[in-house]
Length: 379
Image (cartoon, rainbow, N blue to C red; front, side, top):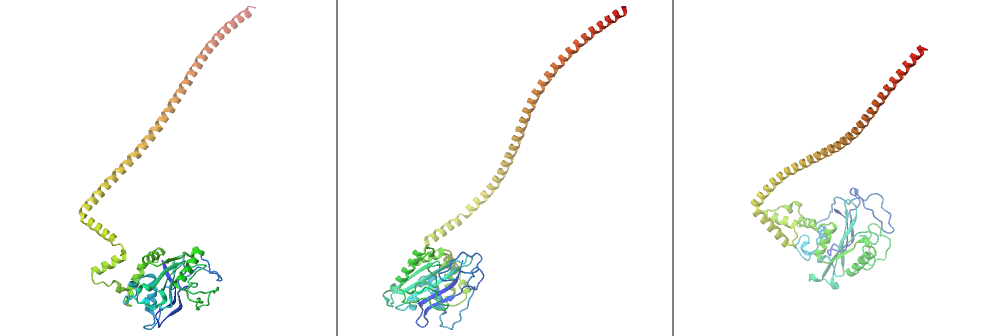
């Protein structure tokens, strides 16, 4: 979202209240920008210190009747709402042409500041009479719109509205324009050349209303908001007057103008037709919705049961796998135990033979001892 930071008016306005070179400065009095983007100062300027501040949240312009309040609004709206039909008040389709003299090349430039990053964008309008002659023919009234990102090379203060050779910025409150005023072609050539030399400026030049409206939307400056502002200030009334509708059809028209593009009536017709068809099939669609909701409920239960069955199968498979592994281990251990039992049986048999032989040897030894005892006694 952007907020108006400065307004520069040059060589434009009614004959009795001309704007020779006027800048309305609203900068630096609001809240600090929360997420400031990096900026680079102009040549010969001091680097900014601290986060930038938002423009003034509100302002009051005190002027007597006929002092030029409506003129200022008309000029601002001519940038954001191109076309004579969008002129504030709407009473005269040629009111903007009355603000330009034969030798004028009028400029209205608006500098906007982003509320979050503090980034700046300048949008402006330049107009002049073709052939340097005032005419009632609107085709001889030339106008164009432009935008750029201020930075080194071009800013609101250094707009090439005049053939100036000044290098340093002007003093506070003094005009920075020097020399002869540029024509529209000279101004366009100057900012186009600046855009080629400094690509970061992102210079855009448009001469068609629809393309300019689309470009404003791409920048984040919705022209629809300014159309509401124009309607609220059409008779210098209050904002509530915009919504003071007398009939339902008036509110419907207001809503349709807000949400649809008046150039694309076919799309609106298709939308209304599609909505009507859906209303005609409401009973069928309601039954289909109920059936779908019931089916979704039952299918949800089936899905839950299938998930539970899958989990049970996984548990059963794991238990079966572990049981088979245990059975294989027990079988292998039983075979090993049987082999050890056979070995032990053979060892027992061998020990029994050894015991029998030992008893026989002991018997022979007893007989030999008795014989020796007999002979010893005989001797």
